[in-house]
Length: 456
Image (cartoon, rainbow, N blue to C red; front, side, top):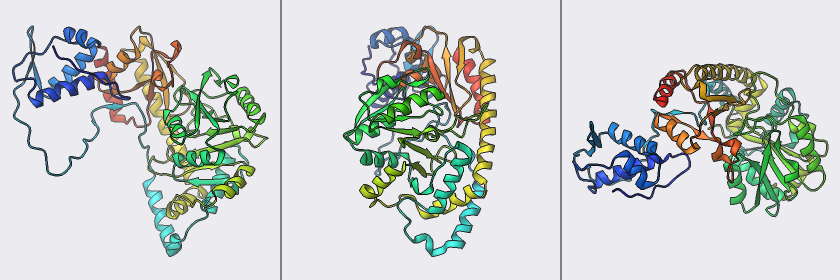
């Protein structure tokens, strides 16, 4: 009987781990040509995994020609030629399997190439060698003015450009904040939440606290030991919650009672479809305790590594005194181009186009799910903002089995329970996160067929 130590890695289903183990044994000769493999039921029992896991692994091996199936007899190792010798140079990593429909997010939208390239040519002609000069450590002043105007018009924020700091991605800005606020502080993050944030704080040596949430957001009574709270009130990932005003005021009162800070991560606030977004938490702050952060990576493209934060005046003064030696990390060429993109109204037009595109994509996806073979088993939750929603299943299957079913049908997806820092509560089970930002029209048609395969 085959014996393997299957490793459960984030984003990799167990059936794929089993497939890799059997494939390696076939290629190495440990499993000889013509050798009969254990039945699916027997192997599942021996490895203490679900039968679906073994079915997925065998199906992948069959499709790639590593094994053959004989009706009413079983599965047998196929005779293969010896693999070629390793190349003299290191092998390049294999590209991601493009046949999967990816509902885990992170894909680019429609980038405005023609406008962006035209503005870049203008900047090159207008500024020439001056583009080679260093910029102030906070970033290009006209770009900060353009960002302040955008925040005033779109988010109801009265922001002074001198309190804006531009950096190459939010990861860099998080690390700046840890140095500014101190590693001796306790940083609270939402639970469930985006796991990378907790990792950044922990890797920097700061103390971390997973703050539990109710239906309104992080509960203030759980924050007595925290000094800094990192939240995304406009559209929480992964639950999709929008924090109501009352809870925002409760958290502002929590911050005002001591030397406490709130980091407001407003990463995809532009994409609210059926109502105007609530004002930013920062616009309600009267005590100067909110640090506002946003990025152009989500609204333009992930490769546009331009993010910014708005510091309260007292904190900006502390930054210049303590960390003013840092230089600006975003090249002047990109900053000059983005300034023109914002100030000439191109960004607003682009967001309006993208909002329409994503709303239509969301509506098509919701209609597809509601008319699919799984429609009687699902409930769609929190679909009115951001670029993802939740899919709750009426099932007794575990999240692991449910997720494996989707992966075996060629659909990459993740469960809500995977984003809890500890054990997930009962109400979080049987929920999958559907990111549709990288879902093309072609893949929508494929998805319909994959859902039929999922049911079969």
